[in-house]
Every structure is written in C-alpha cells, then in structure tokens.
Image (tube, rainbow, N blue to C red; front, side):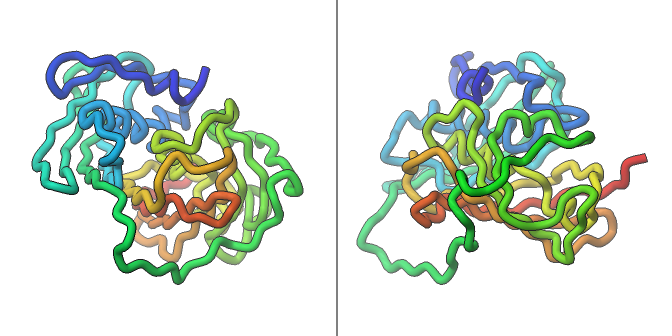
Length: 263
C-alpha cells in the first residue's frame, strides 16, 4: 500500500483514465483533497508524456466526496504553446462530478530573472524532533505520513496563531516527485486546529498548488509550514510552503475551506 499504488491510472480512451480511490486516505467523509489532486497530476503527466514540460500550477475545486472505488479522470489540452500547456481536468464517479481543475505545465527555464525573499522556518532536523502521535479524532489518512513536530498549537493545546510547522514524509518513503508533493501540500493538520485547539469539520472548497522547483527533489522529508490569517462567515484560508532539508522551496499552496464545529 503506497501513494503511487493508490493513485495508479490506466488509460480508458483518449484523454480518459481510470483509477481506484482507496479509503486509506480518508478524513471523515471521503478522502483528503491532496490525495484526489494527486490523481489529477498523474493524469496530466500521462496525457502530456513529456518530462521536459512538468506541472507548474494546479487549481482544484472539490465538488463532492467520492466513495471508495473506481473513478474516471478526464484531461483536455486547452492550448499547447512552444514552452507551456494549459489543461482542464475533472474527476467523475458513476457520472457524478467529484473535482474540477485547471492546470499549467511548462519547461523549467534557467537563466531568467529570479529572486527568493522568503526563507524556510527555523527547525531542527527531523531526527531531532518528536514524532507526532495519533490522537483521538485525527483523520485516518495521517497514518500514511511520518510526522515530526516543530512548533504550533494542537488539539487540547491551542496557540495564539493559526500556524504550525512540522517535518513530514510518506510512510513508505519514496521520491519527492510531483505526486508526493501534491499530496503533501494538503497532507498535515489544518492550521485552524492550531488556533482552535480542537478538531473541526473543514472541507476544502478549492486548492491551488504551485510547484516551485524541479522535481523529484532530493531526500524524503519536507518541512511544512501552514498558516491562516482570517476565518469569517464559515470559511477560512490556508497558505502553505514545503521545503527540502537543504532549504529549497518546492511548493506553495493556498486553499479556502469551510469551517463547521463538530456536533
């Protein structure tokens, strides 16, 4: 059982692929968004079949929660230029829309203007950080990751800010490729729980991931920082960054999620 195996796709016609949703990646009702997004990334890569034109941006709107079982992923190339490709994608189950997405793929271009005015949060190496033990009420899919706590609040121990930092890797290890980074961009405790000090129901409206470095990246661990500034009207945003152990920023994410108390 691995992320690669649980997001495997087979071609089912032009621009169409079949996969199988595993309940090993469940929250309360359906899988977490990073897992569904990984199917979309795999379909994009299969459709383009061009390692020189990797995914650079993915925006997913989650329409409904699937059941465990077969899904179909459809990919449409909307435009392909000399150095970039725009695509639309959708996940369906029994004819029912599950997720709708837009994506961009483009060649990595060296020699262009660049800057980096952001730094990774200070953190000891993962082997020096305490392992995150599973607590009652935590989503099932977190058992699929190794997690090492760095800072932030936790259910039963609220913090002043909606922010937390941790090291994470897939339980089975493996390369930090686009599929792994996609899942890990939505793969840890929501920052809202840090401020609340308790679990809540926080289904995602939409998730955007920007891939900021060539992948696969070296190593297995990523340093994840997630934070939120505003919750209002039953919705809150979360910004995330994923960093390798050598300080390379590999992904930035933003999502808008609902906020509901558990009854």
